[in-house]
Amino acid sequence: AAAWSRYGLAACCALLLHELARQASPAFVQTAPGVSTRLFQSSRPLAGQAEIRPSAAAPRPVALPIFAAVCAASLLRTKVQRHGKGKPQTTSGVRVRKPKNNALRNCSIATFEELTTQKRYEPLTYMYRRRFARPRHKPIQMATRTARESGHKYRLGGIAHARKYRIIDFGRTKRDMFGTIQTIEYDPYRNARICLVKYEDGEMRYILHGVGYFVGQEVISSADAPIFVGNAVPLDKVPIGTMVHNIEMNPTNGGVIARAAGVAAVVLSREGNLVTVKMPSSEVRLIPEDCWCTIGKVGRPEAQLIKLGKAGKSRHLGFTPHVRGSAKNACDHAHGGGEGRSPIGHKHPKTKFGKCAVGLRTRR
Image (cartoon, rainbow, N blue to C red):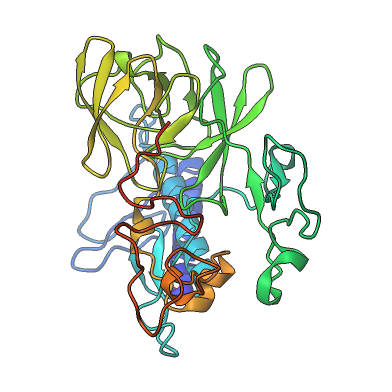
């Protein structure tokens, strides 16, 4: 596949050079009857054909933009195939691994062809630290376990792939100011992509990448913003039936709904100061009309087609094994203890802290 791509690229370059030469000189192109089309220069016409002379009055059609587009598409296709090492693709953005072993059989991975850079914007990234025995409203109670960072010496099993958290502007709080999308980047903490936006005052911020975003696109967060993909507006300004994402549950708290790859919510109706929104899970909720949202659908809908294939791949992504509560001792979990495969011993499932795990309302 890579060899054919190189041949196609060479053919496109040859056609481009021929077009340049034809437009620069009075030479012309002839086609012999009954013979396939050939490109050559001649000073005399063929037998049985009238002489063709270039006319100064009739302008020649300029085909340079077409050839440039073909060459750009060939270069992009060659880059994707070289990155995928010639592996077959099921759809745009996903390719299937060759079944060299049972773990790789039916395994699919991303091609990352939508990314425009491999470097992150360091001022908006930091090493995420987790809190151990450090309540927010109390002083430090334990010093035996220090705050662990993501990656390096704190990872279990010797996995040394550190992850840096990207600070994303879920609230789109930069109001009434246009921003230009600079890059489309990878984010290790979510399955969607993110975009780096540069605003008119020079400030840089990350936002979620949606379907239809491109480098150079201008986005704005304003109550009077047009209903275009990428713009952020309040819910009461959104037309009925529009797909939105990154929706706030409470005003000024930032978007918390419909942020995963390929999902979107639909605005169904408005009544008073509440807006009826259909969630990606088909649940219907009432949300205050002054909550903000972003027009469009979250990008990378092919994320649901990814199949890891083996447990080690999920460990590489940072997921650790999850032990069932009924498999633990009674001192470690509310479901633990008992002889053999005994029931949990409670009317309703509980968390490891003893609180109700199913049916209890936790939304604030």
